Amino acid sequence: MANVLITGGAGFLGSHLCDRFISNGDTVFCMDNFLTGTADNITHLMGHPRFNFIEYDVTNFIHVGEDLDYILHFASPASPIDYLKYPIQTLKVGSLGTHKALGLAKAKGARFLIASTSEVYGDPLEHPQKEEYWGNVNPVGIRGVYDEAKRFAEAMTMAYHRYHNVDTRILRIFNTYGPRMRVNDGRAIPNFIKQALANQPMTVYGDGTQTRSVCYVDDLVEGIYRLLMSDENMPVNIGNPDEITMLDLAQEIKDITGSSSEIIFEDLPSDDPKVRQPDASKAKNLLGWEAKVSRRVGLEKTILDFSQRLSVNN
Image (cartoon, rainbow, N blue to C red; front, side, top):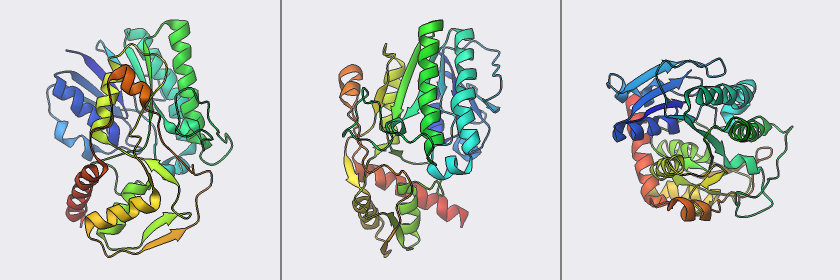
């Protein structure tokens, strides 16, 4: 069985990865400083004999006494409200944090996987986006702190692969949703669900014709695992190509919840991408992966999780 370090392991995606490796019989070292992660996501794992939590900021030198087989670097703010609130921390975890995590992978002889993002494509001029597309990114825009941190992280990962022969993987994550997303995450699905459950106005930005392609978290975790176990060192998109407009997504969530909310419109945020859809053919051909969970089923599961947590907090 493997020893696995997951940075950002108390976050939305990180905690689901902790579950996956624990269920495999592996030993997990979960590292998080709780900047945007939460202990609630990993409470169920505390006390498990193969789960180890380390509260730590990965922009500092990382020490783990045990041998490590895999390092998955997921530490980073990932929501626009987070990286606008924590711009310097976002840049530091993408640069210094990636450097420290790669240094640890080199020292341990561990396979390294970086959680990159579809945001490296910026506001794309190519649609859908395939891995060979270099992007259309504003490096000095307010969203640039996240976009450029991830682009730098990819470059650093490839430098360690080419210069130090570290065994690396680059994962480009497209919009993902599911249980354990923060209620106040600020992204479209948490916002819509929270507003719909409270019968409050549902806020759509711009005219609602901008699109996203949303992937249920269980599908994403399966894709991550397959990429980690593959031999591919170049970037791979993992995401559900099922594209939907923001207005249609809001209406769908309103219908599922039976909400009486009205849909209202506000100005589109600066540099907000107009389209987002992965070309997932590489993942399908290389990994045998494709999204399985329908958007309706995934949203129903996510809405149930949100309603349960909101009722507890109230």
